[in-house]
Length: 172
Image 1 (cartoon, rainbow, N blue to C red):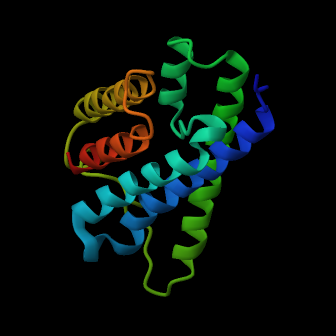
Image 2 (cartoon, helix red, strand yellow):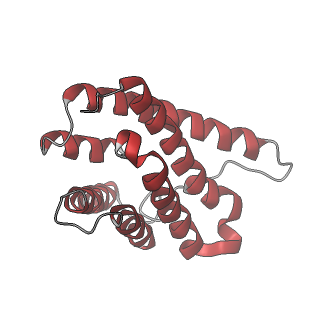
């Protein structure tokens, strides 16, 4: 029987969330004019898919607090796992954002602008529409992760399906 290693869970979630930050907002900030919406969506989706296979065996690769909450509510993880995953996700998000900011601010032509905000924010849609989109699309991701982590789902395919789901979400 494997024992839970909370330090490894924290570290894996921290690395995974930082990679997702680099592959998602990082792609949007550094290459969006060149790769477009599809390139940014692929940055998010491929980052999640890659991390699912790299850190999934260690922490489950939630790299999203909502996914961790869904796993906790579905009783697929315990409270300690959730807390250490959340701490890792917050630290990884801050670390990934700091890396992006550090790299971007070193460019002579860089201006902060919207800093990778999507079209659901700011002048494009109202706050209500942005909240509805966030809740519905996050619920979709959580549902996909919950369903792909059952014994009935094809082993080894969960990371790919979750990554593709995140890609589609970022195309919307």
